[in-house]
Length: 153
Image (tube, rainbow, N blue to C red; front, side, top):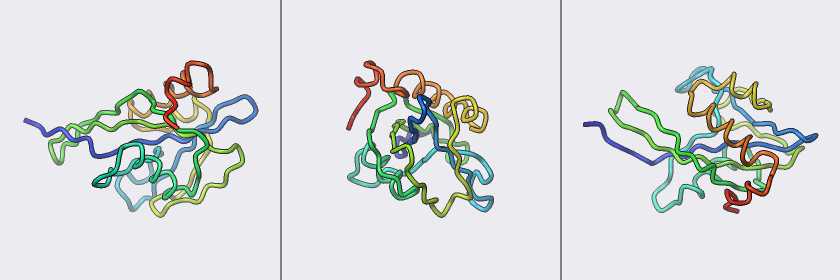
């Protein structure tokens, strides 16, 4: 029977610019796991750390960005790790940043890009990542009244 683990988080960064939502994606260096793929931010939850705190820490460490707003995306990304025979459950968070915020790439990234919904979903490898982008864009993206239900900070 496979193990079940929930020790990682997914964080999606977006900005509102010119009445549009753009997502920040990262190209992983070729010499790291999942090299040459576009990703959002993923990180381990440290002992004693909440999932939300882990997502915010990962955002700051890997991009140098400070969030303006933080949201629970009301979604758990799930996938199967065949190497460890583990079902991974990762809570998804979304962070807005200032429209002109400057990205400082973390060491595992080769590049970054601000992408609209269509480009972001075309670049992302996993179905769960594409679903998260669509959901964030639909429900939280432009800051409608419904988005307030998802705001955690």
